[in-house]
Length: 528
Image 1 (tube, one colour):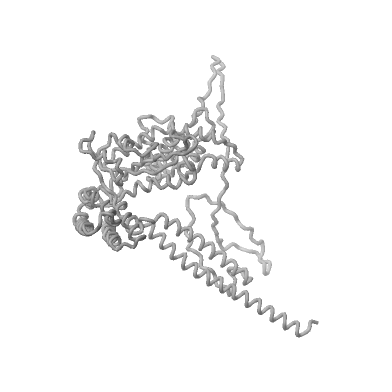
Image 2 (cartoon, helix red, strand yellow):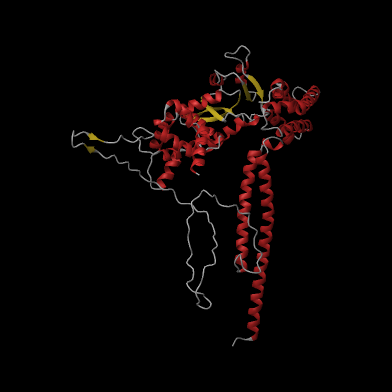
């Protein structure tokens, strides 16, 4: 029999251990509660930033969203880790009595279109209490999202040969169509490669290594050969998209740098985009993007890209566009529409970095114009124009008067004055949106399409050649246009590659993303 003193010591030690565990659990729950509050705050902030397309947050919203989402992920992981440690320290399950359950995020139903696999847990055959017969009352179903690893397969297409017993003629079905002549890759595989390279910006060597880990040896040269062949196969669709873009009354234009491999070094090439997006003024035409590549940034490139275009070009103040705005240009001059986001950006930086009061006041006045413009986004052009002339034109006039007055008092070398000059010297282009309801306030549509290229540069480092840049531009046109029309690029490319060779040339437009989507929607509705 143990001594009373040792028993008392054991009880005291147990009480101390329980108290320490309870304290640890409470501290962890407190940290989790604080983290949950911060998570809710970050989610709200991210939602606001994603919703805002104009205004003060637009200058750095993309970088800020990425940073906040990273912080959100870290906080959620930390809260989950702290809660798990608290439950372990308390020696209790999450559902046990006495423990404060951790608040879980609201669950949304799992996608209805996913197939369901029913797994039934074996039930007892008799009552565990008395051994009596059981009768089923119902069931509870818990759904868990799971993924099946990618499956590779070889499709064997068998063509049987037959001989006629009368005339001895041999009959055999024709050979199946392959998206690539003499190739062994199916349309789904090719679409997966194209979307990974030009949609997710994964270099081919990384794709080759990934496939090798799955037991499929595909060399970089083999994949590159497939990419080149697909680019040629899809060229007719690229041409149709280009024609659709150039038929617009208004375009967004912009460019970004792209490193290009040269002899012993890299040079800085350019990827240009011209975006047709009539949705801001409720236009019926589907959106589309045309990409081009050039070895440098001279003005001859946009002049060649838009040689047959005469309409409105919404862009920054790049001097290479100036020839497009010439009055004697053939087939006609292009109307310049400036980007207010570019003009605001220069003032915003001075207001944020240099704490310049005049720059901050200019940003405040410009933000009032953005706020008024935000309310009419998506309305027909006529309504937009009427509201602009009634509500926004006075704000623009006040801004111009104020900026010219302030500029007259500054030195010509003042940084804030130079930022104001960017707008004042181009005021006709900046105020042109007040006379045409189709014109947007910013050139964000083009900048959004180039964002993927800018992010991709970090993954693939450089384009292998000028031909590689041209090939990438063609594929970017296809992928970006599919995304603009809310079409899955991989599914669309797979279906197009499987059908394009046998599709009549006169009906090739049916394969464009917006027609393809409409046909699929109609087919699904008829099947239902």
